[in-house]
Amino acid sequence: MLEQIQETASFIRARMHTAPETAVILGSGLGKLVNELTDTYEIRYEEIPNFPVSTVEGHSGKLIFGRLGKKEIMAMQGRFHYYEGYNMKEVTFPVRVMHELGIKNLFVSNAAGGTNPTFEIGDLMIITDHINFFPEHPLRGKNIYYGPRFPDMSEAYSRKFIERAKRIAAKKGIIVREGIYIGTQGPTYETPAEYRMFARWGADAVGMSTVPEVIVANHCGMKVFGISVITDLGVEGKIVEVSHEDVQKAADAAQPRMTAIMKDLINEE
Image (cartoon, rainbow, N blue to C red; front, side):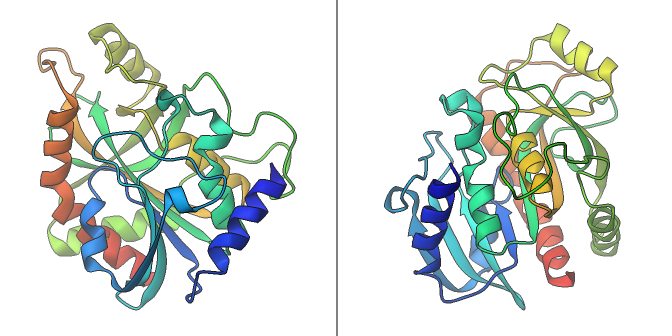
């Protein structure tokens, strides 16, 4: 696997003319961040050796390089999910490639169902911690020398980034929540009983991504910031039938607020 990672990184490096230390996974709610980038160039996933290709509607498939304000960044437009049939090494492969390319900070976003009764659809939740409920661990198997066999996860999400994001949001008059995200395999949305169980476990929101990438980023020594847009509610009395289109619509409505926070946060680093 290490040879594949290095082969992929070598291919991408040969096409790069910038040196970003910050990467963004443009999940739900952050797709339009690319409109803020200048001096861009891109590489489509299908051109990249060993790279998976996203199969989900609403998820594009390319690496975009450019400048966000004063910062050079690398952005993944389209991520890979366990429910698509990929194993965890494939899901997290791009994060390891990022490490080879010199990325130090990873910013991620997602759509999530709110299990906290104080949340409303459209809320932004800064992720303070997570619960890994995937059936396969991304670090299972032979350890890659990027990090220790048993990596510490006591600060999976950078406290420094969390505090900065809260300050930026307050300055801009953007209301943000804080909470714990639980990652599940999907692709079904949760039953009312599952929502109740996750809430009792301490989760404030539930989704189908992010956790594997964050685990691998921590193993690689990256600092991580994560944010969820609450696109549906798993709260008794507020649970209604939900579709992927509903989730996309709610995420799109939150994009200006999420983008504003993320842009300033990246430029402060």
